[in-house]
Length: 262
Image 1 (cartoon, rainbow, N blue to C red):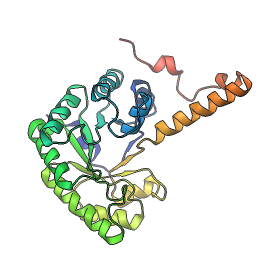
Image 2: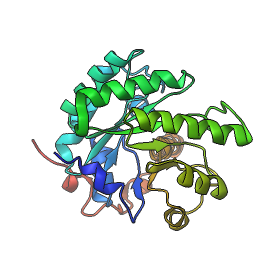
Image 3: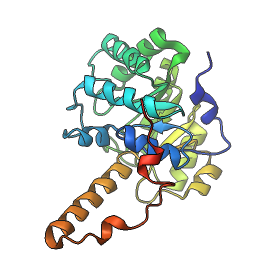
Image 4: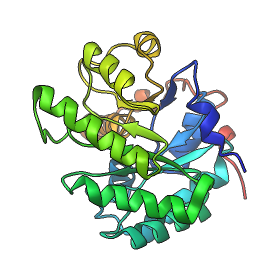
């Protein structure tokens, strides 16, 4: 069976993912025109009152995925951090549960662990799930500043090759942003490249020209949504004015109309 994510990474357009955090946000993002729904581990955690970093119970993540799957029809990929597992077998078992919950892809990261750990997880996942899952392997060399300058570029390439050899379908390099660096990564990595919205990143049209295949918002949409809620609550607590709540919504036909029953 062909995984629906494969064609979305083939181009010519960049797959843009304004990451969701629950069923309602996923439905809004689908109505906005997204070709796929990706979750943000940070935003999902915040939605349930947890910090990012696998503090969220894994069962809660699965419940969120099932709810998102119920209300959306486009492909779904889940940010599973380190797969809530320290070993390859546990990671593979958890990914099978993520797929059963309705996802067709996962984003899995190395963080500060040795790259051998993530490579083993990827290999085990592919052995168990095969083409059912699109694996987006995230390397945190730039995000966590594991190396600097040319050493960071070389380490990113080394990890990307290791993860690709293990079975990863695409490579995610958050905080790689400078145009020259992105061109080198595209030329040096034999897989679609995913980047994260961050300061200094070229605009979408330039990313397409460079050859980037996927652009993620990460926790960005969730972060500004929660900040807007904070500001709106703060303002209402201060003056109790109703006017902000009766402004026309940009969402076609309103929130209630786009949600799904059942």
